[in-house]
Image: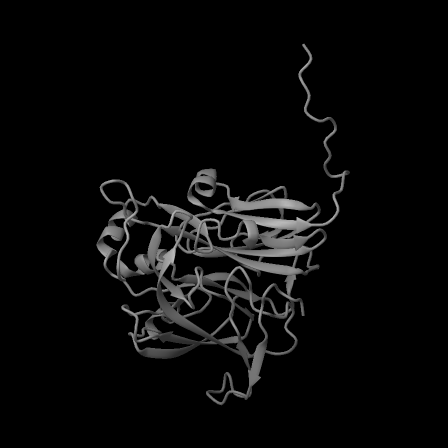
Length: 356
């Protein structure tokens, strides 16, 4: 097992007794963690399929999304934007308990892009405030996939761009491999959820604030229909993964980056590094591309990339729509420690006046 940053342990319980497909299977409770951390997991499945139990709670909260105090009446899973990453193996059963606290204002549900049938579970997970529901689906396709709330009509995009989306990673039972079939292992994993926000402005150009969920729906829908976000950020807030919150790594470590965008296209790029192995379409059934400079994440999907850091320093992981990265917030940092390698890069001559 590889130790993942700030991750949690899993717990086992008694075998399932419901239905022939799951009869006798071991139950495992996965304790979900806030992104960019990922839950503890085995990269190679140690045995046969399991029933993986997870709990998601719809939380409606006021969140600050930038350094100037801009607020959104956020809709979240488990209080994080994006919602927690769920990790299982191909062939496992994922059993999700969705809770909608009585204090909430909206009906919620979940569409799992990794699942098969029933609008991705959306038709079977509708819960009003004060209700909970349990859905079980089987992970029959390996890859990275998003999940999101999908109440229907205008409320589906409204909930998604209010923060109510996350991702599932379904690993092949034998682990990841390259195009030649050789195994790929990673030392760390991070989940980066890219989020577009559409905050209305008042007549003076200032971002509006609202007292309660639902108060600004009509204003926000008007901004959404212009298709021009006010913010494009990583993990719920501009600067959320920079400075003291920068991602960590060391020279020689292979790092897996899972990147999701539930609504718009994105172009992840690691300044000073590359995608050694990239599944930009998210399918682990397909061989990864090798050595990419920038990769493409389609709106409504998640992808993955592995890079082994070769030099120390602060790297910038960003969307290479540079306007969105620099001006709107789609930027993270990776702080890498280790020894510099002059054979890869060195300053031959320092700056000096140009000879006249």
